[in-house]
Image (cartoon, rainbow, N blue to C red):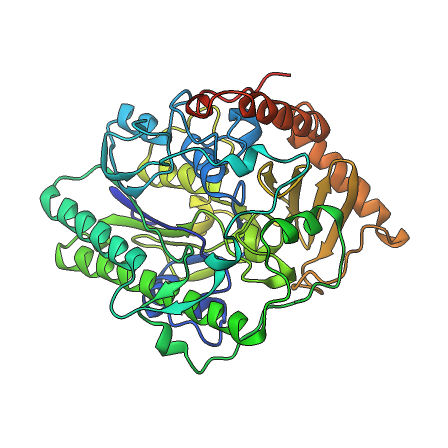
Length: 461
């Protein structure tokens, strides 16, 4: 029988792609603390975010609901407080919640009992409202160039400060049990400037599929929007080096949290989770800044360590939305009725086998695209539906780099038909209607004065 924890810490980074971990087999990235956490806990090797963009993904995570249900379409429709958060839910159940760092909520919005150094979204992002046609993003290329830093960069210094604050909060709790601490770090999000760049200065890694071998219309729009084509090899390698350095910097903060738990005698009573809001393609498939359904963008790390749980790797697909129901089961708290995730606690304790046949869902409705995209990861297959444009289908076992689109091959027509039907069952009333609804709401907000862009997004037909 597995001992149940009394407390939880969630460390959420920003833009950490799932393969940029030593425990994921990366040949260069140094993440010893996360590797140790994966060794003692459970690493979900195929975890996906609900939307590969900061504000929509985080709004979905804190509410436990899909983006199309809450209308958080883009970075001008951040969480506005109109739907309850899991913080509200746990607080009602007697579990005290506190957040530290980036939230990406609209200014002043609350979702947790304590919000320490809350990183609100300072202003709405106009780019997400300019979709027909998409614009070319201003200064996009400048933000993906990797650079060294003498001492901690601004982002690294902010993460050190936030971790300091989380450690202070833990020290102040004393022997008090029954809490959840949600620590949000900025890195490895661009700008790609790191104090550990030099550690990787001799690492020569280039993106996969650059320049891209496909010309899918929607992905082509993204490539133009982010102005990331025709970059020389040395600059591409600099980008990777700085990103790896930022991953190592994040790992150091996780190590500081683990050391604090050990020092305070809390490790054996605390579930510790590490994850990210989405990934970062780093030029793979000639794409940047997340915002697509390739695994480096829509995939995330997900590592959970808890008392009595033995080290394991789970390959069955899971969702970031599964994390909160998993914590609820670990703490003995009832689920909210509208949470869309599935608890993995019984998988972690060995009481249930992973669900190999479950379909995990993600969606995107924001900048750089004239139409949305909807993804299902179902067993070995990943299916991506684009309204008014061709489908994509990848066999993730034989083609993990997603180089060969199988959607138009006759032999895979039954797979496409099956997954398209599963998608229609997941998205209400259907993906095409949701896509039109998102674009209609964005046109509506685009016509308002800038100070009214926030508001409550329209989720009605």
